[in-house]
Length: 153
Length: 153
DNA sequence: TGGTTGTTGCCATCATCTTGCAACAGATCC
DNA sequence: GGATCTGTTGCAAGATGATGGCAACAACCA
Image (cartoon, rainbow over all chains, first blue to last red; front, side, top):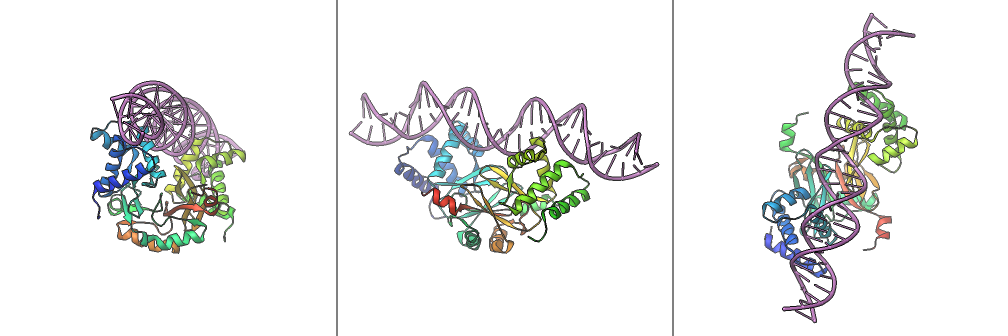
């Protein structure tokens, strides 16, 4: 992790600005949370984001959260990973892919090099996958150590 | 494709039977469609399955389709891949993973060997992924040739 | 500082999936 | 073949996640 959270938010805001979009409280809040989550446990669902925003005193509508997330994805600023029927969101400023625990939904980042062979195989099959993991890239669904312990089936 | 569709349905029904579950019209219908789809374009969503069942004269409730699909997944007979906010379902009798087009939702199957390196990387990161692709395995999200043509962005 | 225009809040709506319960039907035994 | 047991389905309601329209608001530029 070279850049700080503030730097990453700043960079994202500049990209928004260049696309003709405004620097608003709602967007700054969401970007700050995404940057924080990226350095922490991984990605967040729209609901988790909404709750975290409220906890920070940033009251806003759920529809606004969804709208902003969609915009961030359209611009390639954020990317999204489907987990257990819901979407989770993270910053896409550092190329990576994802391994998801289907038990608890926790998420690990995988470097691009680790999934290169799989991307080659997909290309052979006719699907071109972004090597930087945008908008979803490669997702591996499995179980983390803790969930393998608790559900011994 | 070594086994016929009928064989695959039969095998699945035997596994259901062994688990103490009954051989019903609804289950036969769903398994037949999944077996057919696997040899065709890939997987089906619950809605697509429901419509196809109605088209075959097998009237049943959407809730029944969902219930049966969940049972098939619990038994490892079917597996599921999230595509564009919905889940798609396919038979899991032949070990494979998936490459999905985010444009049109079409799906290609990848052999287990093609994604082995990625699964190793996930294990290193702490997530154990089933090499046979159950229940979701490895999913690569990208774009097929046709969608890359139509949306030139 | 005022005007323009993108953005947000609010509300309604849609789609997908889940759950509870009573009626039904497949499987087994006699 | 018929009775019985119990898993299964239909029906209806609802939880959850995501989207769209419109008026009020606020960020940006001149």
